[in-house]
Image (tube, rainbow, N blue to C red; front, side, top):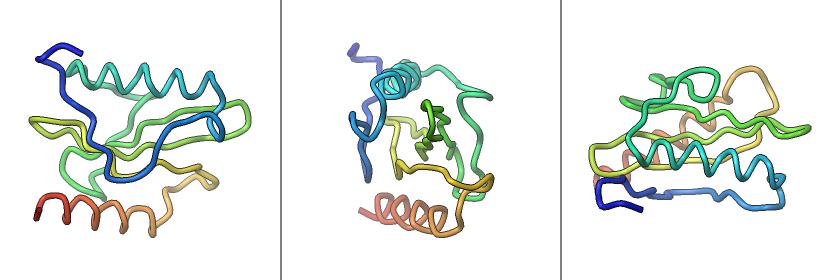
Length: 110
């Protein structure tokens, strides 16, 4: 990692095999590395999530039989990861949004 790269700050969740397949874990790592290098990702890899907060996004990882989501926020000094979850419905569940907002608020207050 270069000094110019942003660190990943994990508030919750992890990416490991299992439950991620090896391919999905590698894809998630590749996309997170691009974010660390200050690249902006767009659809189909990342979708803005203004309902969670300013600069919040949903990283979209498709596994063989599972859709994974990583909720993150791009701060000036880090990529803050609020949640990693298996998506089972077309919409992001409201409890996931609420917990992400709460985690990010607690992080900002600390």
